[in-house]
Image 1 (cartoon, helix red, strand yellow):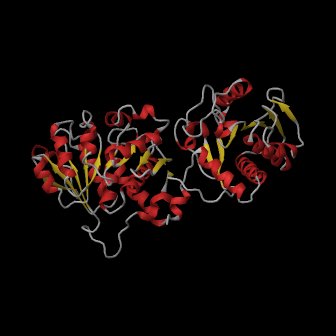
Image 2 (image 1 turned 90 degrees about the horizontal axis):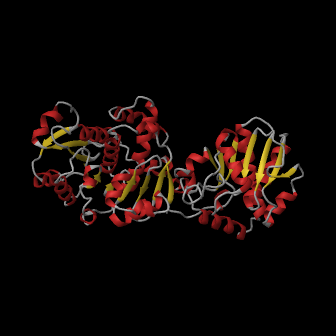
Image 3 (image 1 turned 180 degrees about the vertical axis):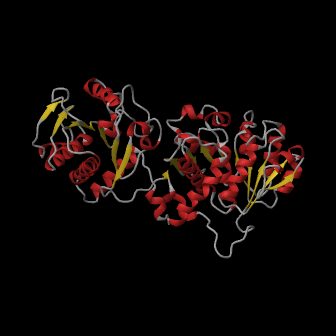
Length: 488
């Protein structure tokens, strides 16, 4: 049975949300009641963030517009100076019912007063499938200049709910978006996320909805973090290895190793070419070091470990390719990053043939294209691309970006919501790979480990902020872990 943590972090497609709405109505909740709840949630969010001021609510013809009439009525009841500007007459029964309860000033869009200080976009929401035009397009351009004064109901009009892409130019922007039941892909993926501003998810009583798309946050995985207890010892907390590059390319492996150690792996060893031993030894304390010269030696050294990280500055060489294949013959879960991905660009199927569902690939978009040529461009959005890639590879895929997506071969996917701009620095991906390996080494399931690592990675970066370099991240990890431990 799925735990409460899995249920809280869900996201739904537009069709899944509509199905939940229909199911609630079929179970006896009138659509007008759901609309009243939705409008109340928007009005509450507005009142919590803005002082009363002249406010215009732009209402479209559908149920999004119906929500807008509720917002206008409730704000007026609370003493706000508010009026409605209609893009068109209400076209659904529920929207007409809500419009009938609004007794304030109503004017066509563009013909009402021009003194508004706050604007509410209740024109189309997530269900729109065509570009904005006419007065709606004009208002969208206004919102791009004055986004701090715009609030969106469900989703800024002109953004596709499932793909997060603008349906054309322009699309609305908002500083606050209030949606219902669960986020949609457009709330979590760029560029839609950037159009939404703050996103508030309101419970309007639709009940549980099955989905395999989740918001990546502690609610998803915190109760699976393998905290030590009084009986724990270093061998019980997992054994992780990192494969080092040559003598001039050792730093990335050390970043990954320190990250794995900081996130809790009991024993972390760097397996290093002999010529790189001195470079690595000069910078290591708790991380151990062992020389290996061939893929046979590597396979033997990795035979008893729980997780292996390979790729950070490993080199795009035949040696790296053979090392990956050797590690795949062990019982270790693999975390493949950077060069260990690129080295298979000529024959991705060779890699996929040796992976299993416990392994993790961590490509940025360029590396993703090398393994899955054309897939990202051909997919409607990053979630679909990552899911198809995970299915094709038979492994977990973490597609990096401002909206990092983690996908499992079984169809589960999660989108990271706490991405940090401070991670745009050399070596941050090496730390992420080490976090993933360290959590897997401790027994965490690979999809959840990748999700947890991505969130912890960004949380650590936010603790530091400006001036962050990758060497800072492992040292910041205990502060994030302490917070998670105290909140467990």
